[in-house]
Amino acid sequence: MANALGTLFLDSWRRARDILRSKLGTNIVALYVVQGMSYLAPIAVLPHLLRALGPSAFGAVIFAQSVTAYLKIWTDFGFAFSATRDISISREDRVETGRIFWSTLFAKAGLLVSGICVLSGLVLSVTTLRMHATLIAVSSTSAVGWTFMPQWYYQGQESMKFMAAVQAATRVLFYGCLFLLVRNSHDVLSAAALLSAPALVSAAICLGAIPRVLPVKWVRPSVKDIWAALASSWHLFLSGAATSLYLNTTVFIIGLVSGVYQVALYGIANRVALAVFGILSPISQALFPRMSLLFSKSHKEAKQFLKRVMGIFLLLASAMTISIFVFASAIISMFGGDKYAGAVNVLRVMAILPFLLALATILSQFIMINVGLTRQLSRIYVAAGVISLLLSWPLAKLLGALGGALSLIAVEFIGPVLMFWVIWRSQVWCSNTDRHLTA
Image (cartoon, rainbow, N blue to C red; front, top):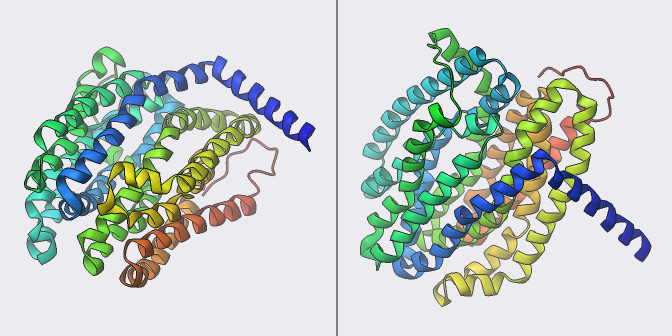
């Protein structure tokens, strides 16, 4: 047994060493060095926010962010994956790259305008939303930033170091201001503004720097091009919209049936779990365009490459899950103090989230999107969203934040199971052919 474990460790180490020595590995390491500040900044400021705002005000900020998250999902419209994939495949063709870039940007701008109109109407007509209208408006500026953040372009070009540096710098700057400007619950609007500002400012910088960093040819997009960009992302948008049902709507439902205090307990646990999983973000960002390129050339080569990296990916996620579960009490005490003691069990339930999200990332982003199974993926997320709605309301009403966490984990478990079943049925993993599958 010891020899087998030793052999497994050495084999994993050799694979990791080979990857780190490659161009892909250099890109991943660079992203970790630069984006480290992006992940440390939100974690560093969270204890101050929790104590300064208190559970009610902090819960109100999380509630407003859950509402504006719908606007972010609407303007993204699946372009984070479809445009990244298309740019990655066509990056040697300047004309085609320009057409994809400008068509995507114009499409996202149109989606933003329509989304703001709809959100404004809902805020004016729904009493609960109208009570938090100002907070929602301030939080919505982050959605404007994410609309025009050309992350899909930088990622598709496999040149993310500049973008990551800008995001890290803006987060450090504005999150640092939180310590100075947010002192008590009366500073809730300032907190929302400073939390939203990094997205807006970094988008302006990254978009404005493209002519110098990664020049793109101006290709005037036609209505047909814009419509084609929307159509190609439709199924991915459905996936993202369905995902929001159990990521954002759960927070919304907890607020409606259990109050903002329970939202605060759910929010701190969810943010800690997602922040820990975010450590894997540079790896997934670097791997996705590489997987897109490999699958476009040879399924066999893509599968061989994926086998090399997914073991390391899942091993890291497993370590995160175990750490969160074991140290949940210490984590909550460190971040929030006694006022948030009720979040300990919520965090323990969410401890498995990094592993489930890592598994879902491999199955959905690395495989299904790149082999033409986007329609099936959207159906899976729609089904997961419906299941979440059926579970979250009664569980949240009965158990508050803990019920919301149980609902989230149940759905995150069902998702990868369905993904694996679809991939297995499509025989994409078992087949040795290089033909492309169709949705």
